[in-house]
Length: 113
Length: 113
Image 1 (tube, chains in turn blue, orange):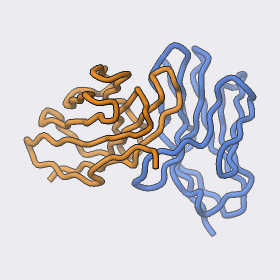
Image 2 (tube, each protein chain N blue to C red; image 1 turned 30 degrees about the vertical axis):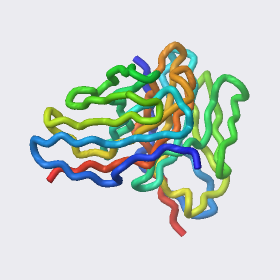
Image 3 (cartoon, each protein chain N blue to C red; image 1 turned 90 degrees about the vertical axis):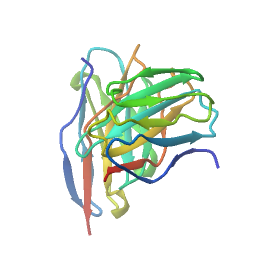
């Protein structure tokens, strides 16, 4: 079955330090991969997506993610956290031949001053 | 402005009552989706529609119904058969069902009195 695992339910960082949010997916089919961000009581906003082009994907607000097929991972990173980055982040997968998206359970990013 | 609107922002349901959540988009997208979000969980697909006058059940369709009479509108009715309706409901759309990127509305929070 298709699945996506976000390894941390919460990540805490200090402002100005690097951010790493981890995501692994099941490897049955060639996937398209996304990261979405959700601020409290808001809808989801697309940060970036991987669709079999370059393995390092740059998104909005300084975020980027690297697709590693050998590790079935798609971790999200940012060199320097900002207070406004505090939100919930969802890793999402769509497998070739399937219309539906599969969502991870989310990682809440907390940023302290 | 182009986008997806959902109304109301908050909705209260009494026991045995049906309630309808509105979703409208002016993006000229063919495909529309309804998701349910519960705390600590990823989004789960309720229903989706690839084109006007057509819709399919998602993973958790029981207790819900939809219609797609117009391209711009995809209302969701939470029926009295849905025994645990308290959740955050998100509507999304994509250019067509084959397009992977979905764009989300701001959500409706449904609470039971």
